[in-house]
Structures are given as C-alpha cells and as structure tokens.
Image (cartoon, rainbow, N blue to C red; front, side, top):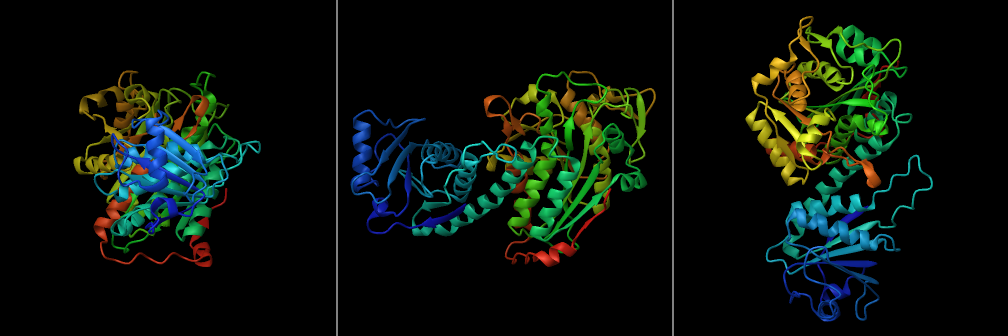
Length: 513
C-alpha cells in the first residue's frame, strides 16, 4: 500500500480525484473550512440527525453531486492527535474497505492546530490494521481489500513533516505485519526452523547478516538451560542471531531478545486443554524482534541492532525435562526446574548471557512470559521491568508515542527471596503471588553486566475470542525506541545504502541441523 500527501487545488476537497474521500470532522459544529457540496452534505446530515458531532459517529454517502470522489465518508474525532486519528481512520477505513475503492483520500476539518507526524504515522498503522486479512492457512478467507493507495490531504506547510510521519509509519507497519503473520501461523507451520527461515529471508531482502545456531552449536556454547526446554520435542531448536549494522563498527549495539516458544504445552507440568491452541502465540516475543528488525532495516536507520531469538517447542515426552531437574545455564549458574511450564525464562536467560558478547548499549527482552502479568495489567499495557531509570523512561515514552503503551512494574530485592533453592543456585519459579515480578527477578540474575529491561507481553501480543489473532505488539514501541536512538545518535547523517540481493546473500549464513 502506498501513502502520500496532497495539497488540494482551487476546487478544494470536492475536486480531489480519489475513489473514496474520508473527512475526519472535529469540533462541536460543522467546520467552516468545509465548503461547497461537501459542506452542504455534512450540514444537511447534521440537521437531519443522520450524523452527530460526537464520538462513534460515521456517515457514508455515494456519488454526492459536485464531489469528484465517488464515495464520501465522514467520521468524528475528538482532536487531531495520534490516538484520536487512529480511532477515526480505523472506523473510516472499515466503512469503505468492502467496496471497490483502491485510492482513499483522508482530510481533517475543523482542527485548531495542524496535524503532526505522529498522527500521520498513526494513520498508516490504522489503515494497515483495518485492512489486514490472514490468509496463509485459510484459502476461504475474504478477499483482501482493494485499497492500494492512501493520500493525506494537507496544507503545503505541513507536507514535509507529515510525509516523514507517513514514511516512518510504513516501516513500522511492515514490521507489525511480519510479526502478525508469523504469530498467526499454527505451530505445525511456524516451527523453530520456520522462524530461522524467516530471519534468513529478511536478512537477504534487507542486507543484514543472519546466523542460525543448531543444537550442537548451543551444546558447545553451554546453553544447558535453553536446551533443557527443547529436549522434549522432535523439532530441532534454533538460536537465531540477526545483525543490522547501520552505524559505525565502534558504536555499541542495541540488543533485542525475543522468546521463541513456537508451541507451549507446559511440558510435564502440562497446561489445561482449554485455550491451549493459543499457545502458538507463545513466540510473540520472537515475532516482535523479527518485526522490529524489519521496521528498522526498512527505515535504513543509522543504528546497530542485534536480534536474538532462542526458538524451540516445549513438549512432554520421555526425553522431556522433569520437575526437580537441575540444569546449568550458559552463565554457569544452576537452576532447579520446579515447573516446566515456566520455560520462557529458561530460554531467555541463556540468550541474555549470550548478549554480553556484543557489549551492548542496552538489552531489552520481550516475552509472552506470565499469565500473572495479564491479571495485573489486562490487555492494554505491556509490563515493563527494569532497574535502569533512563532506559525504562525511554521505553515508556516510546510506547506512549507509538500508542503501544507499557506500565512499569517493581523489582524490589525482597521478591528475589522467592527463587531460593536447596539444590541449585536458584529455582525457576516462586509462589503464585507476584508471578510476573518473580519471573523478571529470575531474568535479572543474568543481567549484572547489562543495561537491561524486560517486556512481558502476555496480555498484549494477541487477542482471544471472535477476533482471535496476533496484534504485532510491541513492534511499534520497540521500533519507536530504536529509531529515536538512531535519530539522537546520527542527526544530519545520510542513511546507509542497503545491500543488494547478491551482497545480502553473501552476508547470510546458516548452520544446518
């Protein structure tokens, strides 16, 4: 889908050549800036009670006399901010997408101040979200909307800023789409090998290096904790390393670590059967790392970004790890596995230790880690844990700006007492109370050499019920954070040239199982 800006001509909105025109209306009365036949149509609808100037109001009209666009739609918005724009555009696109429109123009009327780049970015993300259709394993799914082009109508002075917001939105939307496509695939399709293949494909298309470590590589490194989770499955584990090097070699990278459990039965501590199908989404952290790499590489950001994905299945079998087993992590610390369903932290801890070799500026791990976080925060905000005030502040700000919010949770040292073990350096679980916090405290034990934050996305990575499916979160938060870092470090510098397909292919290496 293409996004661009347009300054209307003398005929105003009525003269815009598009298949559909969506007018976002602000204020408590018909804006005086809407003139001619469009203004008349809106005033008549308000007077007749067909459209009220309040939240949730939509109006569709076909072939309005004097209006060049065949389809005309109105939607009310509270203001011109990103959040209101996202809601308005989502509703407006839903109104016109089922028709034959391939080109949609969007205009804002009645705004007391100009739209900013964040609102333009929100427009792109809302449009992609409203038109997304999963088809990979569902041939009978409805046809994808015909919408191919979206034009944001604006004043000439607004164009440069809004065009930049649209470009950033397109990069982030592509990352969100990749994350959703990976997470929505069933576990018999999205295996650890599939995730590795997607990483390789992304590296080839966007010119960055990808390395995939197999079981023997992980054994040589000493990743005993990661491999203990993988040992119950016939699917071979993969440890995926992606390197986008958009800045100088001497610039410390940011590292993202994504939990890649492609299906979680709970292992020997098996889960209840109800809703276990949703455990295909337990690789949402891995999907978000892939999506963020896609967004950052697509934007050709001047930043060094490493993506680490420990990927495996958690299955019960005669080989599976048992409650009470003790394993040795890559850090050398030993872990008593009291509950095999607390497996995400067991694969993340080895990945966090592995991240030390990059001497990173900061490390963020992302995981659908605990049901306790869902109980604490519901499905609106992700849980954020960090002992680094500055890093936590950056991530919270990025989430708020990207409309992908998080909430900071405590890491008081008293919570660490729950992880004591008589038979190892630590247990992998504590009591039920404060489960999201003790999970983060477990990970904290492997971050002494790192500036670290942890995002628990168990409540935000997917939706249940009639609208079941992956959300692509927290790609917007992570992409915004990384791009902000890039902008701060490289203002005024030209972006790097992307590698061509041949160069990218040489930069991609895979160790086969």
